[in-house]
Amino acid sequence: MADRPQTPHSVVPREGEARLKAILETAVEGIITIDERGRCESINPAAERMFGYSAHEVVGQNISMLMPEPYSSEHDGYLNSYLATGHRKIIGIGREAVGLHKSGRQFPIQLSVSEIKLERGRLFTGIVHDLTEQKEAERRLVQSERLAVLGEAMTRLAHESRNALQRIQIAVEVARLHGEGNDPLATQLDAIERANDALNALLEELRNYAAPLHLERKRSSLVTIWREAWSAVGFQRSDRDVEFAEETDDELLKCHADRFRLGQVFRNLFENALAACDDPVKIRVSGYPAQLEGNTAVRVVVADNGPGMDVEQRERIFEPFYTTKAKGTGLGMAIARRIVEAHGGTIAVEVSPLGGAALELVLPVEPPRAEKPVQSD
Image (cartoon, rainbow, N blue to C red):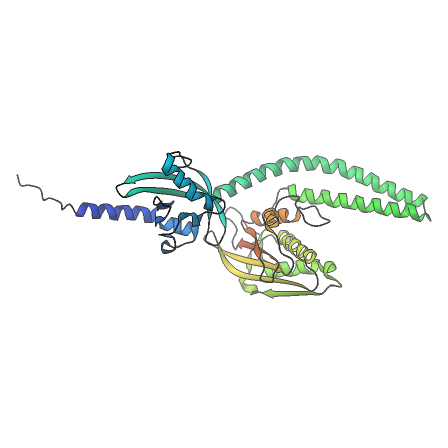
């Protein structure tokens, strides 16, 4: 029997290296290797996309560049402690952590680290999974459950409260009839009426926030929608020095949307901008084509020249009942986010090119396949 041809020893390592390279380059999860000094030795394409850096920007650098504070400063100390004591906090265990994108954006990750001992030293391999979508889905689920409970409670509360408020209004009107000419009494009755109106407005806003959203989508011009919203806040800008500018192409900003609901969103953004800015006020609306999760979308940015937002305001602006105004329920931006997300879109805070705050809306052009939009305008 003839001897089988022997495969040269050099071929096997080359095939193994090619196979390993293919696995790393096609892996869905981010894979990063570092040495004992915390310097990056390799980063696969998935991790490059996740953190926004190219390989040549990261390889050779301390991996702490991919971590926000205080984790970035603590990383080398943890690594040195492990090498000296063998006490593990994450290696071989895995945990949730926070990643730092090149843009400065922080995002949640699941990090699993394994250790390899080589002749030249130890090598640590980190497998990184972006938890952003999972955390957002969890947030929406919790919000949906809370809204269901709140909606049920609001139905009972609104019924009982409106009856009481109507009785207050009737009592005020009767008191006015019997107190004509009594100026001090009239002043107090005016105050009662204002309080009554404020409670009615609060109940209505709570109802709007808690009620299920049923969108009536049709192909609409976002330019037309925000122009109608701008007209609706005319009373707030009367006798003020206000400059309103647009940067857009009407034909590029059409999508299937609920015109009334998005009008609510734009009115809220304009009201907030006018309330935040001192004269002279500058408000600019910019619109562009965009992409959202691989689908055709439109992007609209409402920017102002006000004082902007501090870190707390940026983090809490969409929380229910959070407000920096002397008056207001703090539900406006929470309702705006519900409406935008019901459309399958996103809303976020940006730094305004005018020096103040900017709110960015990204909306899909087409509705989900499960929805059937009504006729176009």
